[in-house]
Amino acid sequence: MTPPYFKTSGHLLVCQHVNCKARGSDLLYKAVWNALDARKLAYFKTGGSVRLTESGCLGACSYGPVMCVYRQREGRLEEGWYAATDFPLAMVVAQAAHDGTDLPEDRKYGP
Image: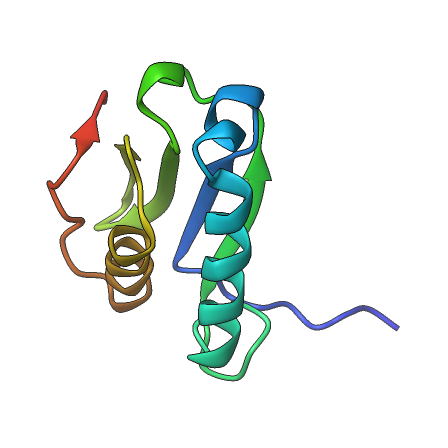
């Protein structure tokens, strides 16, 4: 039997490399995971569509925790890279990914 396919509206990656972990990225990942699950935003929940993954280095080691998000929007790939990510910012990004609204500009860097 093939497992069911769950549509995702965004994929969040939270860096778990040494510098980001020293700044709390492991706790951030766990908190975001629990919140996505509780709010039924996680891709495997009914109505949820946000995927969350632990990541290797995302390249802004001095400004961690670093998080990025990828999603399809208006027929193109959109990405957002965030430095000094805290729980409130991560949840705003996750909600925007789920809702298909504009990603926040706060602490955004890169492409």
